[in-house]
Image (tube, rainbow, N blue to C red; front, side, top):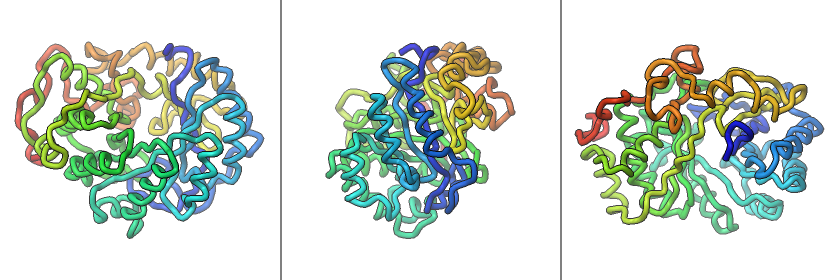
Length: 373
């Protein structure tokens, strides 16, 4: 796909209203909708505008807050279907996600739903989500979505509070029949600003672990960790993984993976193949990079994506620091959101990556960092 002409994914924060209080929430979601939320007419115009990118239409990822709190969601699904724009949903697991609602969404043409599972135990997951009993409700919701014929993607945040359970979460992803496991590497924005990120060396080991996890039948993707694609490419070229740590836990949970590697390797990043529309219509390179490019109520989304100077520089890989010197800057390019959070420069280097171009990669053949053993 020509990323200069169109994104693969358009994320729409349909509302910030949500019944949960997740510790890492980018949106700092609340119980009531914020003023300025797109009206039905404005939202209709935005959804219709996606057709102007031309075929193939980007996939509209409707998220939140909780997308099921958007009162005109069914009308928006009808608009998207009329324009042949595929839609995937990212609902919260609350009392709104009933069997009746799932069946109605399936009839409306929704085929893919993503659900967050941030630990393999109630203590960890419920601690992240802020609701006691939410782990059991989440596992049950995934099973119900599967029964209704939905393709389920499980989303998991990788941070200090969850990393020890990643292998066990991988086991659950396989056992529950999820087709995709998407692992989000924490960016300290929103309520996540007070949480602890992993070190660059730990991120490297997590990426190797995810390559191996993808051999167990489900696709693995990452969010704000484009260096995962570098690791996947290095592994495909025959470089050895680090010893021990998360890999040993994965073998204990799932055995040796004998299938092909199913690691997503498209060269997307914030603003390259991805764009984000907030609840009030403001457009950003991603939901984690709070630099407004314009607003869909007054600006043409197609023109913003194709012509905005920042997005053009991101797509051209005009980076500084290690990211600008890296031989993987096109395939990877680093997290633009994390670079901005760390330095205020969206074109700066990603401090979460341990790789230095032209040298042996950090962790090659080495034991896992102490905290991952």
